[in-house]
Length: 474
Image (cartoon, rainbow, N blue to C red; front, side):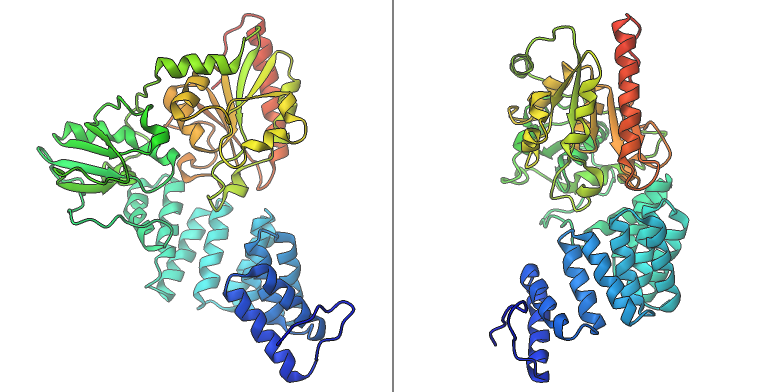
């Protein structure tokens, strides 16, 4: 059936046609053609505005497209028709959480759980909202209920791991961390070789493969010398952007191309991010960050890219992590947030932003005040060389934060309210990186106060340094 636009035209409105239109809209949604589905839903709702399920479906489509205000409006329309529908309330709670309206989100989730206490989705969604609000013990209770209702679903077990790690309960957290393989976001590498699980390995060759991003790689390689100390030969997978920086990693016998796989003499394999759990990592027993190699050629190129100092305080900035990370919109900001830092007398800003959002520097006049390094450096070795020549890095969380911490460079890591579990809660420092300082959102979504505090502290720091005072930046 050919579907016409509602505005200015009159498609057939018989019950049969409307049923066909509804089915077509739902099928289009299921096929992933969200914009087409939204158009079809709107046409149907023009004639049948009392279909609560279609209002909810429309909200789901908008939420997938990150159109959160529209999603909230659609869920509210559904609830006007069916105010006691737990599924609609749970969906509303999710969209309100996306908008950082945490009190209203938790209220919606709590009501959904009360209305439908034996529904897996309502209990699991409530647990996630509680965790994002920093209420970890309550989140664990909801995850336990979700697992009881649906014991074959791995997601609550994985989410429990994250809650335990946020709390600093590493023994339980690392045990549950293995559930990450069951939730469909990362895949365990198939291999004919046995997996190393921390047992005696003297004389064995172990191949560590990558599973997550550059930041987690930088975090985890610190454990490789401990594997080497067990008498093993250590192979580690390394992507090209990290190869020069990792050329002299302590405890590593060879860096391997991911496309080539394990060398022929490999006895066992293991995912790199299993290492913290295998060694029972906690805040009291962490190895130091890896010693990274910055080639002289990288240093020379970095100095050319940065230009003369001219007596200015050099500050690197990053405003976004990987755009493929599903929560990147929570941890990242626009480049315009950093422009006021250039108003501090004596400061020169440098962009270390790489990837799809490096072009943001050309928005809002930022390119007049930030010297662009990110689009010019070729790999992490050159980024590290630039960082080495800076006085301070101020950034939202990404792999560059791990690089700064590994280099011992002072870095002010600006964190959203429910940041990476590694950074725990309510702390301004971390045992993982001595040079890292946190600036946290006091409430979900409050970047304004974060940047106000950063600008004030930067002004004080630069003033003290120009007076000849000691630079204390972490």
